[in-house]
Image (cartoon, rainbow, N blue to C red):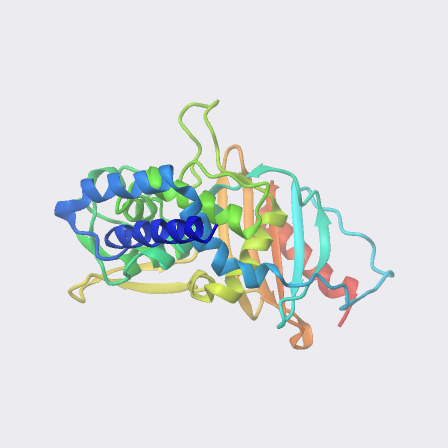
Amino acid sequence: MLKKISLNLKFFLLSFFLSLPIFWGTNVGQKNLEDFLFRSQIVSHPQIFSAQIAERSEGWRRTNVLRVVPVRNWQAENLKIEAKSGISLLVDSQGNQEILFDKDSDEKLPIASLTKLITANIVLEHYDLSQIIEISHQAVGEEGNSGQFKIGETLTVENLLYSLLIESSNDAAEALTEVIGKDAMVDLMNLEARAIGMENTRFFNPTGLEPDNPNGPINYSSTKDLATFVAYLLKTNPKILEISTFSEYNLYSPEGIFHHKLTNTNELLGEFSGAIASKTGWTPQAQGCLLLAIKAQNGRGVIINIILGSPDRFEEMKKLINWIGEAYQW
């Protein structure tokens, strides 16, 4: 038995060190070979990557779900929204959680650009932020004009991460994905979701765009899964959430030349103080998707608010947040 464990451990370590060149300092001249090796490792031994991700999330998943605060004010009527699904999840400083509002939070729905939060997490965990990426023809050809990037120009991974999260650039998502290849990126996203416990989630691309074929696969999740992911980021990768709340950000080239000003796609950032996380999304199938996490009253923690499938995402989010303030005694 001990011999079997030892062999498994040796195999794990060998596979892990073989994968390091792919995660760190990817070289353009070796890109195709590294993409192949990286993809081969994930396909052949997904348990290795699952184990690494599970180890990071194990402590977080042990958090007890406690119903302790705040107190429901029953004089406030129940909230009705037109969105297909919605949730407000309170997470205190100890990681304890309380659902304050729930509308079909387990329903699987397309999530559009909320996908980019998971893409950003893979980038932050596995990329060198100072690595320089050359913008390709394929990246510029992605749907949408956000990013103002041109073929052949170079930007750092960190530059592209800011563009991804603030202005929701599909070009930035594609440029970042090309470092390891789409299949490897999507595999890592799904492994991460599975390890965290996002049972109603599946990714097919890193942008959230809908396929040209109307019958093609589309990224989906649930508001409960997405709230679970944001709660996970609060403890493990808060930098992603911090970047997502920048109303504006000046982007510069690696040489220090001003590129353009990023403007956040979430128009509610100026309406609610204490924003902790933000992300917008919209496609014809998904309709309006919106995440806005804010500080709870009296320092009680963070309230993660998410709606999917809304005909008016910003108005309905305002309605939800205002209702939470009236429906609970803090």
